[in-house]
Image (cartoon, one colour):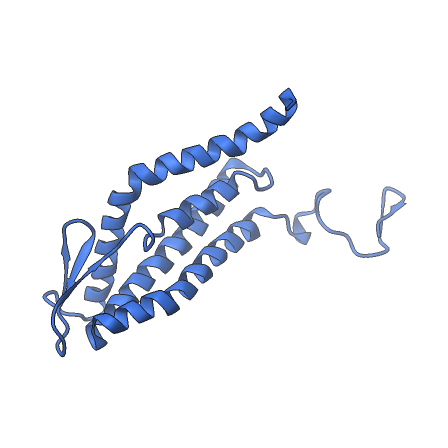
Length: 188
């Protein structure tokens, strides 16, 4: 392999290694934060404090009125950390723009992803509170997967929408109408 090929591969490989290191360093802490945020959302929406209780190791004790209590744990696969890191990774390979615009686009995408996942966890807990642990698992596995897909793709598309040029920005990378002319050369 040539030196140039190694140089081209070095950046993505380095980013993947960095993403894996960050994931393993932040996983436990991030899961606790998301579990706490989901419990907080439920409490804000009127669920009694004693019906949903945050316990150590990113778990939530759920006390449904019609079923026995159970423990719901936010695992690594339930966390949005992997989606956040994936979008941040992809953000490194987007078109170069002003640093503030790139940071704003990434923050907006991450906010959508994090809020979407907290809503997904809270909704799963709410279903479990209303209908028991089997319903929580069913909702989490089926509807939760759709949530995860939607908020991850939605966050990424928002980031691209913020970063990519628009017609009103002018510039050489703005699309031109078919048959228009620029500098005497027809653009098709």
